[in-house]
Length: 472
Image (tube, rainbow, N blue to C red):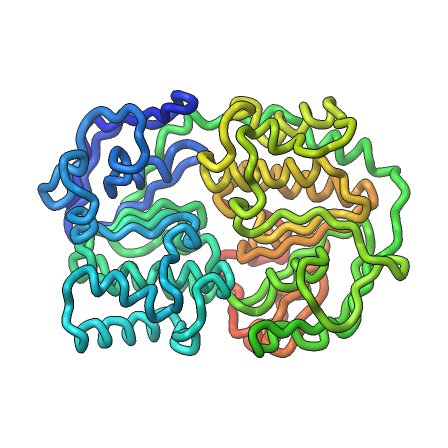
């Protein structure tokens, strides 16, 4: 179904790209493409689906054929009948005014009858647990719920070829496990699947899956030394603690957070985990002062000053270059600090590149750099910071978090990456009725009843000994 011959591509903005590649994927086969952040996985996905060269105009050589159709010479509407593509950032493909409309739009384009469309939509809603969101606007969903909707909308069309760019990145552990199993069902039914994914634990062992690694020669190496920075800062004075009391958030008549109370000491790295839609992003927005709420949030009876990295980095990037983005409205910038950030976050080669054309993982690192450049007084809030990051960058991220904590700052991040949460000092597990568990990673991960109450489970590959380790 997919035939790629001597494929290469270079972006016009900076000349970097991918290839050359030669490979094929037959009907019923599943190919898992791995590679470091920025090595070209999303670019290859765009080439396979025809977005390159029809939408992204650079230098493409070689050929891509889907079901016998040459992608360069076939209009996108025709290619869309043969291949479904789920973007790395699901918000980029949300077009409908409601969840139902988002799914029906693609089915209408296939010219299906009303009864067939309704049946496929209902099946997709049930498959991805979206039945209660039928009338909701996609933009009001959580990141994980949007990812489920993007998957539901594409899979409802039943394309013979499925291209998935980081489809597990925002799914909770239960949803990710279930979807990985569903991919096996699709492959057995004859779908050709190419999946680009960092969370390889969920795919390991799937029957018949092939694994291929992209050449990471174009991916920058980390040259900074956050570990030394962390140790040098360890003697800095710690500030007052964060107090959250009776926090409550209602959005669109729905109670997202109910009567949440906790405190966080400076110097502590806290991970917040929970099911998709449990309120993790809403909590971060409330702590940052961006979400109207009941109850109180204070540090020394004052509104905290936090830097925030959004789950969707596109929402906070708007300048013409990475350099101008990071230095935007920073008075008397510390250029030594800027240089350290550029090296440590592997952004030096992108200084003159528009941020929004970078990979999702690179955009997240640019957003992190902009927040760190501003040196918020009390600390930093990171919403799903590991999206699009390979293992080396995840370890670097934890190193930076520990460096901030060593400087007496409060560090809180939300994540579905339980490996990442295991590296924190403290884990807060959110359930439907508030905090289901709160303690060290070892304590929380061993509390099976709490995870059951939260509607999740701890996979056996996370930790067998309770040690805090990140593994591939």
